[in-house]
Amino acid sequence: MKIISGIVPLSLNDYPKEVSFVLFTQGCNLSCSYCFNKELISFDGGKYSIAEISDLISKRKNFISAVVITGGEPLLHFDEIRGLCSQVKKWGLKVKIDSNGLLPDYIARLIRENLIDKVGLDFKGNIDIYRRFLQEKYLGENGININDRKKIDFFLIKKYTEIYNLIRKYPDKFFLRTTVYKPDHSPEILYQQMKALPDDITWFLQSLNKKKLENNNDLITYKKNEISDLFDSPDMKLLRKRKRIKIMYDFQDIIL
Ligand code: SF4
Image (cartoon, rainbow, N blue to C red; front, side):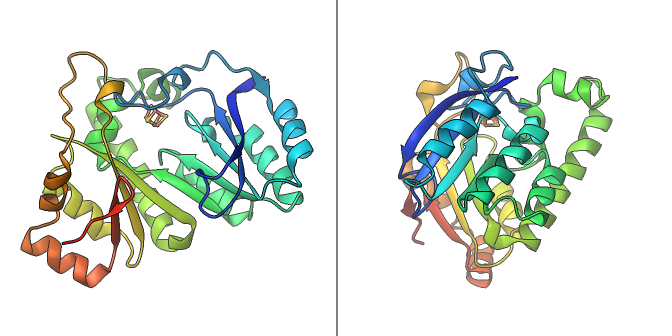
């Protein structure tokens, strides 16, 4: 089955301090209106099978130090991706996998089996934000009707709790990244998010790319000066002092 839609054979940007081979899986369980890779949301359009990708990596394994698996949501193809991770680890390369956090049990399994070194977690904010972008088809596959709000919330709270527990258990494994925008990322939401994070972790915030938004979208980009205001309340300052969480916005330090 062709589940990979694209590759970058050599990258210096996708795994800190490593030279990596990057592959993009096709298909996602969310449909974020600001998605950077919209063509990867549908499950149609894969160009390479895992065997073909494995062959390409094998030919380059002496020139790279890591493989980055991104998407779409790579963990929707768990068996294939697990097999690839296992092969890549046998070659002595590092593995980073990107995920939106809705499949924490798969992340836990890959960490426990020592098949991944890092997780790039696209950490949306809270369950209201996840609910906004959930795909009906994905809910159906989990036996949930799109109109059954109670069941959806129960499903999301369970996933959200599990992913937070994983971040707390393995803080060194995670790179956390959140696309922040109005109105979803209010100071209160960011405060709650930060409160639940472990101490001493780096949290990458990125601005919403307006060009990627669908028409008539109600999401608004924060200006640079507004970002520091989000972290300016006395409660937030106190929390930051206690937790020592480092916050980067578009790769620049947020200094308060
Ligand atoms: S989770 Fe990521 S890949 Fe999936 S739709 Fe959202 S931004 Fe795009």
